[in-house]
Length: 234
Image 1 (tube, rainbow, N blue to C red):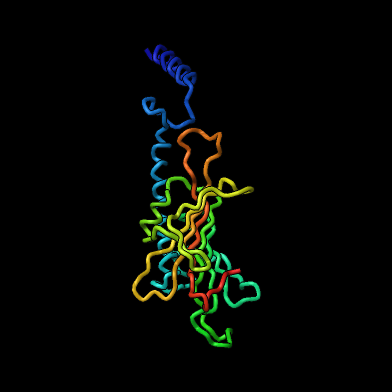
Image 2 (cartoon, rainbow, N blue to C red):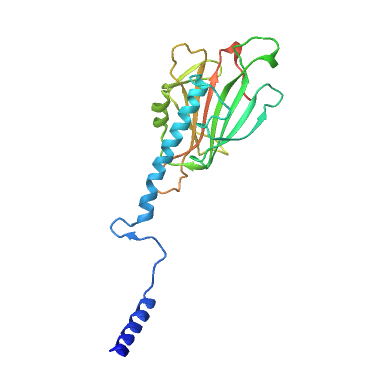
């Protein structure tokens, strides 16, 4: 009996070694998706939510609802800072683990509302909030930003001229796939300056698969001071 048991055990071992074992995730044949892919899909929604939160936080800083703090955890980790070229102010560069494929900056300037002659003694204020995505982001359309940031259905040019609508259309070579949307934020009580928002996407090329969506590339939020106080960041 012992000799027969050993023979059966040997056969079982040989058969188990001959059965191929897949190194790939288990696949749901009905859906044509791997289980790991199904679990990864919510991460896109999570990232979209984090982007909206960070952009809303940047809006609150530029609008003046919250103070600008260099080590604000809502912006991420301060990577480095550099002075503006030949102008008062600083550009702060951040990395944020919640959106690792992006760069985030805030630019400060001497307060345009302070008309003091000695500009070196004027307090610095945040003028511009920017996000640049190294990897284009899918899943956030312009309306999501419009609702989240309370943006108006028009934009204002540098000369103060108002233009209805927000869709500026596709760009020109070499960035003919760049598609920009421009907004003026709705005014709040006590506003001393306007807030301009520009959101840029890349449209899919003509040979893209049907249903391919435009992807988020850049977000800019800036203060627009009255003409006598306006300054354009360099």
